[in-house]
Length: 459
Ligand SMILES: Cc1cc2nc3c(=O)[nH]c(=O)nc-3n(C[C@H](O)[C@H](O)[C@H](O)COP(=O)(O)OP(=O)(O)OC[C@H]3O[C@@H](n4cnc5c(N)ncnc54)[C@H](O)[C@@H]3O)c2cc1C
Image (cartoon, rainbow, N blue to C red; front, side, top):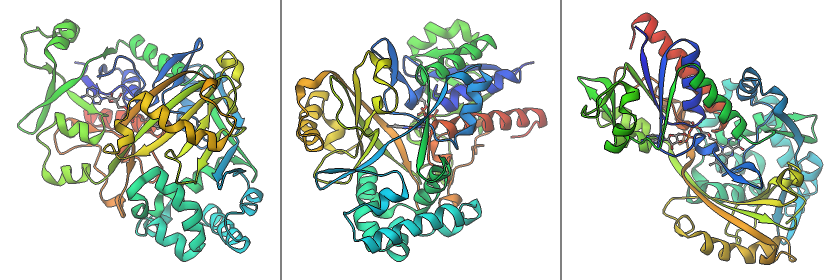
């Protein structure tokens, strides 16, 4: 009989796992607590189109998701656009794309710029093999840069960026993070000077819709607004899922179980929820596995999205190195995608990564807006709240996992110690940093593993 596989989470990992298992003939049941699919890459309606709640693009190294677009007939939607990256410090915007831009970075002495450039070139071209992982995961980025790139490279360049992205954790971040990001990011460029970024015409929603349709066409079932309350485990084996009573009443018939049943039975369960959320619905993991699930901590993200009459700056991605400014970057979507797509409005993300306990994470939409306005005026003194036609506010608690040193020995296995229960979330993406491409790869890997286990009677 066909195995019934439950998937918890409708982000790219969960949708891809369902799609791949559907292709192999399994009956899939996907449960997403939100009212829409997409997870962290989900979108909202704006000016007759859709836009990601958090800015999203691809690098040319993101081959898995681009291949998935092609497989689903969306190859012609993939567009590659030269991007403009900048650096804001001491009241000035500087371009920050090419080695020439680095040489012009007048916030540090010239000799330090050359040393920094050489260190980046060394990492990119001589250290790109994954075999170097052991070397870079045992040292923090701060120690490495101070030792090999010069104190100024850390104090004036990486430290402001890291403090912005990782807050109090900045000095503890492993060098793996920056080593592999440099390898992938500069590898993403056509030639030395240009960086091409990918974005799907019509937004990431086109792929979300295509996956949803493909899963349903295969006979898979998707349940939205369906929070999983518990993974039911008996004698060390996952037996099914407990859903909220109202959800069970709503969808019980489609699961072939009576509303009176205490849980919906499944043969196997894949959980793509962040680790802290997974630990809330599974009580039976042994302490060693729980320790691994807790090894990576999550940073939260707070996004304010402004629909503007005018452009803030000519830059797509502006790193804010000025630490008197309470956000880490501005991302002007309409400097990547033409404003015509959004009825000639300018779209600006104001981005912050922080601990969920930060006051900025707790602030309301209006409080954040009021706190940010004077700082937007530092970037462009002409900026006025009158430019803002509409604005939105989104928060994500599990935006960015932070891996500790020597993380390769701490990654939780996909096959959990509970038989027939699999874990697939962003803490298992390493040494690459989390991203939609790697969640697609994760979903593909998990589907393959489940199929192998079913075929061999394993796990
Ligand atoms: C601000 C920001 C910017 C980003 N920029 C980029 C970018 O430029 N390019 C890029 O490729 N990636 C980017 N990413 C990362 C990318 O969005 C994620 O890595 C990817 O979408 C994660 O997919 P996932 O399926 O692994 O996890 P998620 O998207 O987190 O999916 C997990 C799902 O599980 C659901 N869930 C949790 N608990 C339960 C439960 N009990 N019951 C039912 N459902 C549950 C959640 O609601 C969620 O939908 C960005 C992320 C953020 C936050």
